Image (cartoon, rainbow, N blue to C red; front, top):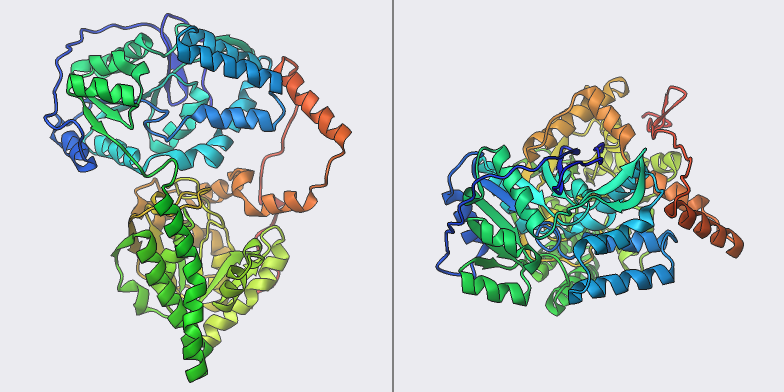
Length: 591
């Protein structure tokens, strides 16, 4: 994610596709506001307000980031990571806490606060920090994005509006999320970088208070518009100047103080509950939904005792679990193409994987005669693991390719001889966002070996129910498209990359994401970050050995030294699935 950081000019950083531009532009601003009659508005009203606004790029939509697009603060994830890496000592943490407290009390300015934080990056490589910020987004921040905020952004985009994020945070906190949301214009507080390393200084003035107004004016001027044609969404009193300047201010998830101000000024107010701390009811319902798997299989035992058919008993239990768990968490499915679920059986049902809710969704759709693939770790779960095995799930060691291939061989026999259908996620792991990940080859090898047709099941928004990294299920409606079956009888190993690209492009087209060529699809698989490769995570886990106390202390000292100015000279080999011209995902044997 390249971007220049040598900002010149008295304005907060402007990041457009990773680039920073300087210069201050002021435009005439009308402070005329459109006041809403009802202050606390529903989400549907927010969408209606967007639809009723003038269409086209001269209408601007500006979003704050922390607390508005995401629940909580992105800085928390970065701070936790620095502590875990040993880059911040207990004494450093005390200093940071004191600075934050003084800022909250009004005795320390925002620029000074940022300077306190920036000093711990002095001497660190910016490129390394960018890579780490992308990893932190996937691991900790992506799951905090409000689904409602995503919908607001999509609604503005559908209306042709110009969209920007203006945040007091650093670009490293905001840019990965902006990229995922498809927002090119990001204005943030920049840090000084010289020769690729942080100096520990902050570029002033920062993107805070009136600095946000300056940024919004420059963004509006870029669209040949002004703040009199601008939506601004924020949760904080820190943004009061821009809320007052924008013609359509909206308080999202606002503090008590800001809500009082909003009522006095007639601003729209809305709250989102889809992220953040779960309610007691959500916790109880989530536990009950998970536990219903056990109850559903217990209810199937009498049927097995009477009929002697384990297949009928398991089919009954799967359907009962799907209906019971869906009712408990309040999951509704809006399915298009449902008829394709039954036209060709057996089939290989391939679905894109975003959430723990996907297992429940696929059980609700396929319902009977299912075999599946799960990671080996699930097998060791008390009660749940054995039940999943009894239901037809084959557990594979994703860190051992050859063992995984051998483990999957019975799936071909189960489909060909018993007429069972395979349910599999070709991404191999949950994606942190709605963006479709690279497809692995395992399911396609099974299709080639068995000749069973593939039925693509495109899940649009299951992450809204339970994003990756969250164990709570929240109620909602998930949109699903079931596409027509694809014949695989003429497929071959030699053309497997073409078939993967063809199937994946069907998913991309249905999701409204850019399609890729065969070469680009293969390259994407090779370029997938290691933290999204389950086989790499498993290999690292298996290879990891406990460190001695001396080694641990030495490592922490090295990391702290790098943060204080010693530049680390490290290189990494590019990730690839090709070694010596051999496809590392190819099967050991072919049936």
